[in-house]
Image (tube, rainbow, N blue to C red; front, side):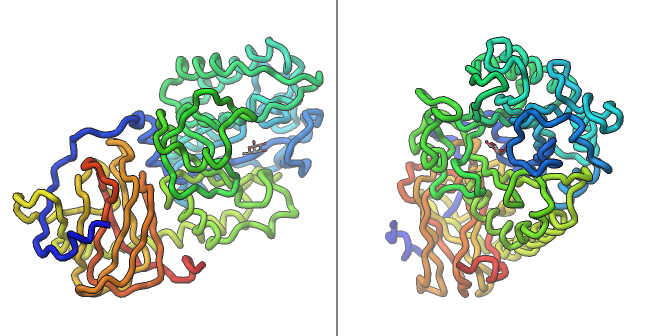
Length: 472
Ligand code: FUL
């Protein structure tokens, strides 16, 4: 803790973009854009929606898939209204049923009664996403309990062929979600997945797609299915020697990342709004409440990760009323909570200290959590509020295009000269939401400890949110 600075009366700051050395690795352009998507929906849909199973056997008749009223525009509208930035659909789950008429399978929408075999969920959903300005992503399970070639080398051709079909017919595909599961197929054999070939295919056919799996290459699994990121959460991972699925790093490593990891592979938190991944009537009364969803938001997005919230369409082919109501409530809580940045009212009162005292005092303008284009290179700084205010939430952002360099920080709350509270943490990353008991403050200081002189805080905000949302 650098209390040395506490007694300094002169606050000096600089707006210059920190261009000193940044720690490698850095995010790719696609990863940076992905970070900004923050929260989006997962949709598990397929024969399981009609059978009530979580993992279909692959022997379910294709006719089982028969939504009575499928409306992908409704899905997109609900997603949009809830503030989600995209939708990732299970194009093929472990049961092998394809939601598009793939020429590589005989177990698809084409073989179902739905729309007399003329339907195509990927087509309808990709169009709806485009119409509503949402990103479109696809989950595709390499494990296939239906395909006769599964367990043989030929299946790798099938899987590659399916991915190509998807990219060519329904692209652009924003995120591709690879499930690492590797069970037995209809012939009792497990497949030896040719991950290298799969990855090369995606890079070749759709270089802008970000690929998720336990170990990336672009986005990693957070190590749990509860929607919770670790604190700290490093955007780095070492993948050498690890495999997808059973050979993946321990789940707590996936959660935290590697402090000095060699690759930029940030965490995505997947979780379902219901107990299961697929819709079933019995769980209509078990939909998570807006408050629970808000709490997950704090523990995922608020720890620098992204939130992938599963909202499974029902057997009508619609997002159930209970789920859409919860999503609207969730959206409202975020709007109410983060609608008024208390630091915005008095931007001329921001004062920042820097070690270099030769500079003139400088007031930073429009310094809020939406600023991403620059960082300020400070060891610590003070934020003075215009008037004493009740605060229980402070949000920090790091200019991650310059890397993730903040390794430890603390925020000291002041009322006048008196320090009345302190919040400590380790990682900041794309966004760090700190909550604490409501405190009446006049200023606070942010200390970037272990700073090496190239830390880049690019955004800061303070809020007073409903205490019920953050009570322990
Ligand atoms: C897991 C699957 O086995 C679950 O069914 C679900 O799709 C989840 C998101 O990934 O690996």
